[in-house]
Image 1: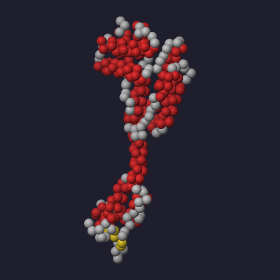
Image 2 (image 1 turned 135 degrees about the horizontal axis):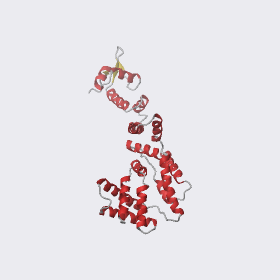
Image 3 (image 1 turned 90 degrees about the vertical axis):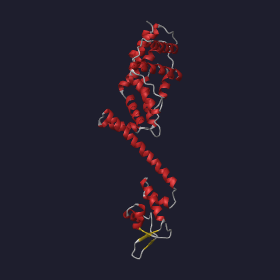
Image 4 (image 1 turned 45 degrees about the vertical axis):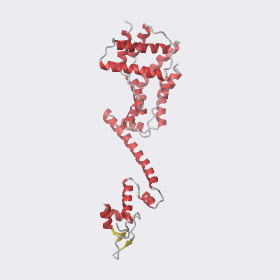
Length: 315
C-alpha cells in the first residue's frame, strides 16, 4: 500500500466497510480529520486514516463514546486504561442482567404478583451488609429471651449468604428464595419453637452442646446416607439401617452427655419423625448454593426412615 497516496472518502469506505455517511460524521467530529482537499473541495485522507477508522469502529462497538475515542487517539488515555474502564462497566451490566434474569426466572417458576416481583428485585439488589442484617434479624427474633446455647446460636448465625462478585443466576435465585424464607412468619415460628425446646431442656439442666464442624459433617453423612437408602427402597429394619441408627444414637448420646439407652433412641426417633421441617434443610441448601458449599439435603423421607430405623434397633 502506498504510504504517500491520498484517498477519497469513497475509497476509505470500500477499504474499511464503513459507510460514506459514517466516515463523514467521524471526519466532521474531528476523530479522523482529512489530510487535504481536492480543488473541488472533496476530502482526501492519508493511509493512516484506514487503521484509525478501524480502531474507532472497534472502540465504538465496545461502547466507547466519541470523547473517549478522541482521548485515546490523542493519547491522553491509553487503550488499556480505556479497556479497564469499559470492562468494569460491562461486568456491572452483566451482573445487572443476571439479576434481572434470576428475578424473571423466579417469576416464571413461581408465578408472582406485581408487588412480589418488585420486592424480589429489591432483594436481588441488596448489598452484603443488607443481606447479613436480614439474617441477623431472623436469628434475633427466633431466640429473643430464650435460654439457648449461645455458642450454638453464634455458630448458626455465622453462616451468612455471601454472593460472589460475579454470581450465577442460580445463586441469585437461591438468595431471593432464602430472603423470602427468613421473612416468612410461619418459618420464623417454626425455628422459634425449636429454640424454645432447646431452652426448655437447658432450663431443666439437660446438657446441650454445639456440634463441632467434624460432628456436623458426620451427622450430615448419616442423614444423607439415610436419604439415599430411603430413595433406593432399603428397609429401615435392614442391617444397613441398624448400622446408621447405631451411629446416630451413639453420637447424639455422647453429645448430650447421656447413655445410649432405648429411651434415648425413642426420644431421638420422635424428634426425627415429628419435628422435621423440610424448610430447615432448604435453608442450608440455599446457603450452600449461594456460598458454593457442598450441599447436604435432608428430606422428610430420610428423617422418617431414620426414625423407623432407630425404633427397630431397640426391638
